[in-house]
Structures are given as structure tokens and as C-alpha cells.
Length: 389
Ligand SMILES: C[S@@+](CC[C@H](N)C(=O)[O-])C[C@H]1O[C@@H](n2cnc3c(N)ncnc32)[C@H](O)[C@@H]1O
Image (cartoon, rainbow, N blue to C red; front, side):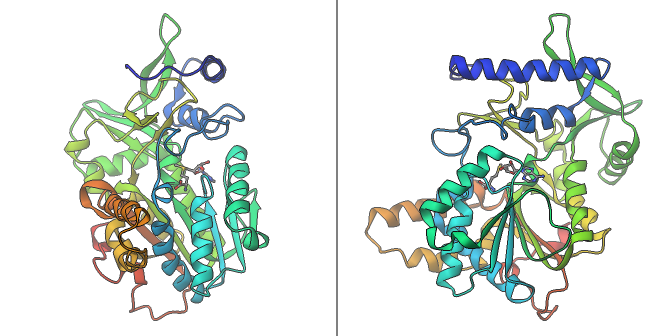
């Protein structure tokens, strides 16, 4: 691939992570599941893409997420948070808060709506990002900083809103191949030259059960390869034990199962981001690029449902943001100003079907809300697609 070369320091850093993975492959007898490899690529202590100090977000990094495009995203989302908090408890837990930009935009808008949470909790696997979140919030909302709390683990019990933007796609996923003679898990080994290479082993345990079910439901032909994230399912199921009253609000790129495992994606959805180039090679500069998979939203709701949580809504990001009044917030920006032109451009990206509007989805999962169960949450008032899951 003809992509910009990292600095020599970054190359040395990448080499340290590569050696760490090589050692783990050797210790495991010559083969490592891709799921574990992805976990190391992203979260190996001090070395993984998210746990080390790479720039990651924004124009100087590898990718831009919705909060980095415009405050409009958080301003629209705030309406949904306010409604859920009013029906449960005035607490937000943002999981995987990135740069902290979304937290800052949400707090400012919730203040404007007179709906501030008593606590805004943040949980992130990355100590580096925690520092960046602290800086962002100290600069943007110094007067609200006393409401922000950083957690080290999921709370034992929680009421309020759990928010995750592009969280599930960053959780480790296994790669599965449906073959003529059975179902295989694709993993990582070393070739004769010591480079990473793919190797398959028969799938076993929980992964085999999940892959068999998907294979039958979606009638997958031999040769189909795709991902299954047991980690994302387990994370959603965890909330069955922890959520007392409230909702998880998860925003990510992905599909209902039948679209996820569709012939159009017969090689899966694994995607890497390096300096704004998207490509499918997870072994390119380990630790210096993002590695992601799309989300099977049917698996997420099934896992949560199995633990007694309910589906409260599912729709495209575009529809959700429109339902939450993003165009009213855009209209409040003074027209004929550079700020308006920037905001309108960002709204276009967030909403339009060929940009983020359709590929990104919003799912709400919860229990015990005090509102009328027959009245949908405001973000799903129009265009709810729950029946597609
Ligand atoms: C793609 S980034 C998205 C960041 C941010 N939400 C945004 O939209 O810009 C994924 C984030 O999720 C965090 N993360 C992934 N798995 C996590 C987990 N199980 N618990 C907490 N944070 C997690 C990563 O450290 C990273 O900050």
C-alpha cells in the first residue's frame, strides 16, 4: 500500500507491539484467534492503538467521528438524553468517550435545556484518552467539571443513560469462515519469514454455536467469511445485571443480521483506518491504525433481550437526528456566516443517506422507564425500524 510512512519513533513503537503479538502467538502454540489479536492491536497496555499516545481523531489523525464534525450532533442527542433522564435518573455514563468532545457538547446543551445530569460519568479503556477528555472538558466546560467523574469499571448498578458512540465497532471480533466441510475460525500465525499470516482452525464453543445459528438463519454459502463479536454481545448482556432503570443509547455503523451477513459482504466488514485511508489489512503498522468491524445489531438486541432488557427503538442516524430536532439547532446558527456554512456542511454529512445518515444506526435498549410505553422515545418518534432486527 502506498500510504504515508510513520516517523521512526512510531515505527519503533509499532515493532514493539508486533513483537508482543509474535510472543503471544508463540506462547499459544503458533496460532492466535483474530479476536485476541484485535484486542492486542487496539488495547495492549501501553502499545495498542487506543492505549498508546497516537493522535487518532481529527484531521491530523486517522479518522473523524460525528462529535468531531460539529456540535450539532451532541446538541441533537441531548434532547434524547434529557428525555431518558427525566424518566429514570439524572445520570449519564458515556463509555468510550474518545476526545471528550461529545461530553462537552452534551453538557453545554443539557445546561441550555435546564436538564443537566447530576453526574456525567466516563469510562474508557484508554488512559491516554482519559487525559485528553480531561483537557477537553476543562477547556470547554470548566464550570461543569465537578459533575464529571471518571470510572475504572462498569458500575454494579446504574440508573440513567448509558451512551456509546462508535463503541461497539471498536470491540474485538472473531473472524469466521463457513466452508464446505464445516465452520472455521480464522486466526493469526507466522509464515516462514516470520510475518503474520491467516490460518484457520475448526470453530469451537460459543463461537461455533453463534456461527451455526447465523449460517442457518442467513443461509450462508460455503466460502462466506465474516465477523462475530462475542465481546460486543457480552457487553450488551452485562447491562441486564447492572441497569436498574434507564436506557443504553448506542450509535454505530452496522446492520440488522440479514443485511450484515449478505452476499454483498461475503468477505466481511473488517476495516482499518490509517491517516484517513480505509483498507482491509489489520497487520499494516500494528498499533498505528484503527481496526474496526461493523455491528450486527440483531446480535446486540438478542444478547440484551436474553438478560431481560427491552428494545426501545432502532433507526438510522439520519432519522434519529432529525427526530431530535437537529435542523432546529442548525437554524439557530446565524445565517450568512462561515459558522453556518460549516454547520450546514456537517449536518449534510451526519444526515445524508450516502454519507453517515444511513450506514450509522441508533439503538435504544433499556428497562423501567417511567414514560408511557406506548409513546416512543423522541429519537424514534418517526421512522422506527425495530421490526427489521
Ligand atoms: C472509535 S472510538 C470512539 C470514541 C468516541 N465515542 C467518538 O465518537 O469519537 C472507540 C472508543 O471506545 C473505547 N472502548 C472500546 N471498548 C471499550 C470498553 N469495553 N470499555 C470502555 N471503553 C471502550 C476506546 O478506548 C475508544 O475511546
